[in-house]
Amino acid sequence: MRALFIGNSFTARNDVPALVARLAESRGKRFEHRLISAGGASLRMHWNRGEAQDAIRGEPWDYVVLQEQSTLPVKNARRMHENVRLFDEVIRGAGARTALYLTWARRHAPETQRAITEAYTTIGAELGAVVVPAGVAWERLLARDDQSYPELYDADGSHPTLAGSYLAACTFYGTLFDERPAAGDVPGLTRAEEELLRESAWATVAERTAGSR
Image (cartoon, one colour):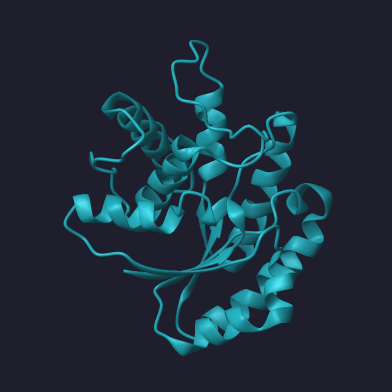
């Protein structure tokens, strides 16, 4: 599988695409990837620069993953949807499929997750795009009463720790490959932490897949 990622530090931090590739390797699969990223960038900023469109057309991709600036779905979902539509037309024209990286709310504003989720799922349904529910997996884990999970947020309350990125990567793997992520060896996480994050991601993917049938 080949995927082009377009986004910002929510994708680049801890190299989410490489974590997905590690998960694929543990299942005997190959996941080739490229990342076009700029700090704090929105999809419109990427569009205006033009590099992303050239990359979409320049190589054969199975998926092109779009990650919008993290607060724009809350502040202006209409603008976000416009941005996604622009890219989706180019992606379809290149013979690839659009995948949307549904991200998480800031630590201090968990109530905004609903708006983020709705913004991504609405445009995903309109375009027939794949929605990778990473933010929903975060929400699921953060709702646990026992708090027996690794810290997902970095000190700024926005960016992911390694655990947060691994949870997102597991959600990507489960969504794109349609199977439960297998055990791997990720330096910086214990086996117990890895297992908890994998299971939370897969439960989220399986629940949303069942709900769409």
